[in-house]
Every structure is written in structure tokens, then in C-alpha cells.
Image 1: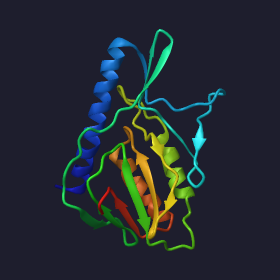
Image 2: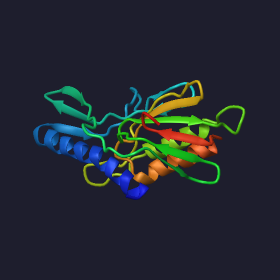
Image 3: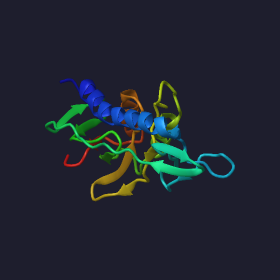
Length: 188
């Protein structure tokens, strides 16, 4: 199986579950799929110190003026043997099993004195933008702040309904930030 096909399957496991939940909840209540968390002025709330980003919820359901935030989590994970590939001349990528809504990213081999987080922040802001089609907004939901590890940095991304292209753009942004190695998933 090619890497693109593997990523399509990993994405599909989560996105299909999100679509089912949106449809089922929408049959009963007024819903807002993949809404951004907004402040009282209607501006997306941004969090984080190194990567300052907005967040999205999976589904908000409204029933008789009661708002419920519904979290949709992957229930399954595709098993595959860990693999490595060169994304470019400068970036080695290692993949272990992961879920689309909880992508554990470890970056190492920094070519610069310190990471240039603006590349990853800019990637996320673009991936966060809605690209509506059907039930979905085709956007990322969350990126955690980065924390330092013994060998580099780590952060978590919820890719939401974002495309595989956005996953690829994340790899590009890691390279632009000065990293030479990216490990995706636990156990790499």
C-alpha cells in the first residue's frame, strides 16, 4: 500500500465517524458541525505560547436552548508496520499507527538554533480555515502547544476533517521550521 492510500484510510476512519455523528445528531437537534470556539466578539479564541492557534469542536448540538459539545473520537486505528521515508532531501519522516483526530508529532534534528514555530502556526491557520462541502468543513480542529523532549519537540494535532494534503502541508511546515526528522504516531 502506498503512503497516500494509507493516509486516506486513516483519515476515512475518523471522517466517516464524524459524518455519521453529524447526521444522527442533526436528525434530532439543531447542530453546528465543526464550529470554531469564539469569544463574545465572535473572534476565534487563540491559545498556546509557542503555537498560538484557534480551536474547533467536533459538533455543537442545541436542544431547547441547551448547548451540548459533542466530541467524536476515533474508535479504531489501522495497524501497519512502522515505516520511514524521505519527504525531501532535508526531512525524514517516520510513521507509526495513529488516528486522524490525535496525531502525535515529534520533531527533532533541528537545523537552526531554535524552531521557527511561525511556519507550523501558519500551516495550522490555513488548515483551520473552513472549506465547506456536504456535512463537513474540511478543516483541522486543534494543535497543542509544543513541549520540549529529551531529543526535540512534541505536539498533537487534531486534523478534524482536513484533507490528506493538509497532512502533507504539515510535513512541509516542519521542514520550513528547520527540523530534519518528523515522527508521527506513538511508538516510532
